[in-house]
Length: 336
Ligand code: NAI
Image 1 (cartoon, rainbow, N blue to C red):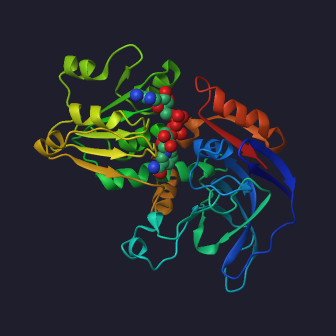
Image 2: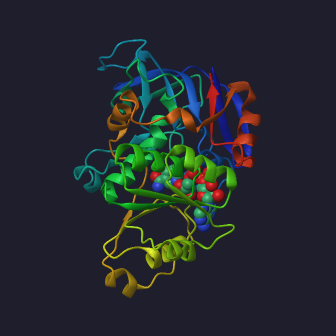
Image 3: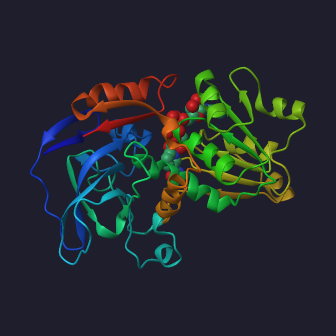
């Protein structure tokens, strides 16, 4: 089979490997479609602190059950998506329903081989059946939308919220769709620095957009007389937290997704004086079923995020397009 492997930082290639056999409790999936994520690029460039090499990357993938390991009962040929979070099930975070921060966390495509491969073996419990109403193109988007499902669960969202989302990249757009189309927030403000991404924010549910390459955000909000009650940082620069604390309404919630190793300098007094709640969110804890329901019911339009599709053999163009063309590119899919 063909597998897309980062052999070492900077070196991505297709390898021919033996088709793997599912171990006890695993299924083998014949992969049909996958999505490229920013973290795949980080693994390629050696800037993902969790990755080990060589690694078959890819954690947004869809296909059909092809073979069952011992003890697994499932229908061969069933359409599935795979939750990449593999957890021990017994540590403290697992015991309180937070497998996404398991003490032994293994993420498919990061710590373990992932889905950019013609076949992949995964724990059967990580496979989620997909109803026929969710088409193949939408399937690999369940994982990125699970990021939005997780952070919005942490922050809570109310219909009365004035929400602000920093960043209208792929992750920001999932958050925008969930805030507007699942929760129906009263007002949704989105900021980015790229005109095309601002436009994408509008197309995915933003009521008000602010291009911070042209206008300073605090001044724009002050002019409009708006104080966000919910802020989600999907741009993830370390300077954003301090600004978010400054512009937030008293009693607001702030959601963080970033992995920067640089410090964010914040003033305790401002957090406490407004009694702000700051929630961090990593990956997802059991949110696949919820996202599949959202897709199946037509609540969300995940296909709006797809801008490019390439065959596996064109992986080099696919990765180059994803990484270097943020004005035209959002989600890039690999077709197997
Ligand atoms: P991206 O880089 O494609 O999008 C980020 C967007 O933010 C860009 O459009 C950029 O122009 C904009 N931006 C940058 N600085 C800004 C600022 N100061 N104000 C407003 N907009 C700004 O990245 P993608 O794939 O959308 O991911 C976003 C972030 O989410 C990344 O930092 C990624 O590491 C993180 N992430 C976190 C996850 C988690 O589970 N915690 C999961 C997936 C991604």
